Length: 171
Picture 1 (spheres, rainbow, N blue to C red):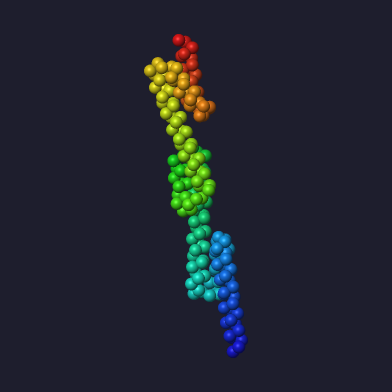
Picture 2 (cartoon, helix red, strand yellow; picture 1 turned 90 degrees about the vertical axis):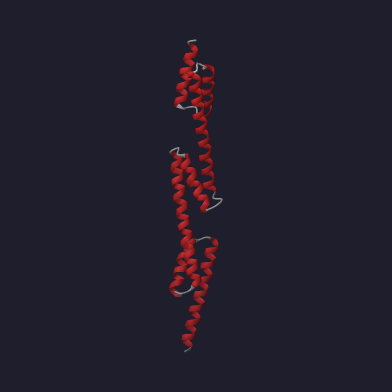
């Protein structure tokens, strides 16, 4: 039964070659192809522990990649809607799953800067209104102008600037 022995050797050679290919794909991070080739390997050798392990790792990496892509998409959408806290939270979740992820870092930084700017504008608007109520029109105008330097088309600050300027002109 030389033929049987030759068949076994050929089977082992195919399994070994396929295993090397799967390991190489895993080391390159080509998880989609790695998973497919590991499935092929499991058809040849259903109880092969390394094929099972590499297949499961590929599945896990692909799920992680999908989760990261979903989180980034949601993060970008929140950023577009000026929902900065939510965007920061989602970008941070990406960075927990994949530390050092460039886009997530950039989005978190952008959202943080926008949140700071939003907070500055709110403070300047409140200060402007407070000075205006107190009759401190020069200070109110200064706060409105400071805010408009940050955001030139801010409707409330533009309105406050017009009111205060008109009030100063009537003094």
